[in-house]
Length: 160
Image (tube, rainbow, N blue to C red; front, side, top):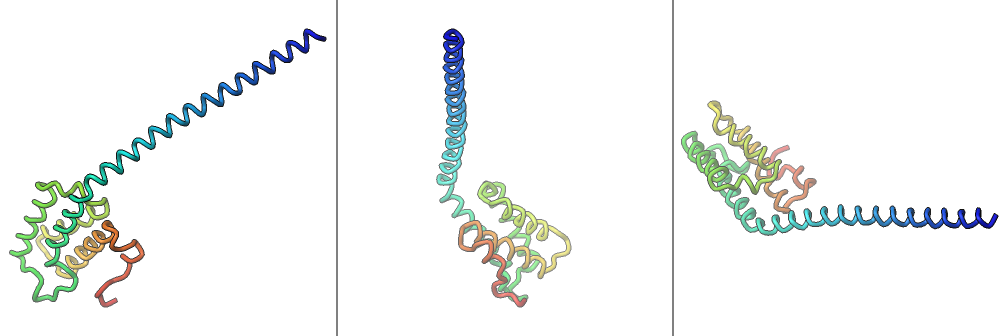
């Protein structure tokens, strides 16, 4: 009986030891994983912070370059075909050669490329161009925090 009790105590100690060992191992693995995630997040934040000034400048420049296509422009103020081609060339340089594509959000990039496709087409419809550029300009405001997603749903200055 005494031998059985000693064996039972030894088994309990072994189970207790293994239990604590695996809990410790789990905590160690979780801590390692969490540390990797935190380092990645810190790296992303650092990169975003270091790019913030350049990104703001890129957005301001794009805002200025797209002004001729603003929704508020009357038909007589809307750029003629030759002027549109000049602006298209400037936008291509801004996007590719100056590297500003890196700063646009995915949604803004999609809208920018749609704008470029419309400008490069043979048939240019003023209303379509105005609408697409308006969407792009609205997205720039969302990206910079001027508008929320809900604000972006409001059709500012447009007849509904």
